[in-house]
Image (tube, rainbow, N blue to C red):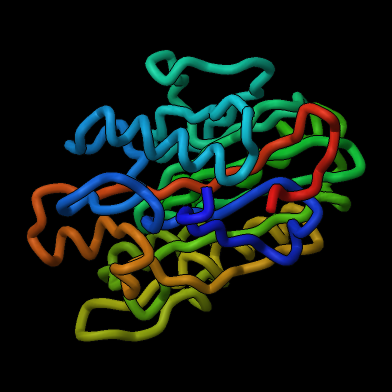
Length: 263
């Protein structure tokens, strides 16, 4: 659908995918736009319409598959469509089956799309700070390997998420990351007293790279700073809004085996 904005990563240029924001949907109020969050307080029919619009904009006719995201490192291997009411509790998915469109919902966390075009294996991960430090991207890469992918052939793109300038954390948060690896201090810069600014996108890219994925693209799009384009949990909280929408990032394999994006 032409009114749905589909943001694509250069590194995934030959693969059916898209990072979507809030443009092109039917929701109103604080959810205005393409809100796909079934857990939001939005009208259920509007959410269902938005999810259909999102899928149609990226891979028409595909079955959209999502999970019940819980900020974990859990990954599921998808072999068939999953009903929205039967979603497994996980934060990543992989598949080698054509006709499936893997969807990750975010509202500041980092969506990561993976592909090994040679093996015909794709993956999608929801990397909030808990999942990122817990290894959700590592789990995704390992699950892709189990389907025949090779990590040295995998490419990955990190979509719209909260940026360093918008992501203030306290010193206790920083200590948690430095305890995991002292070198993680590079992802923080000083802020107001007792606080620092966290670069989630760079941290996730680092985790993907050290896992052996040689090509990683960061889109550098800040969800918090662009209310016309993206939903943001933190922005909604700071504005004391009653709820917030979720955007979706999608990757799939066409039924005919064609990896090219739909224009």
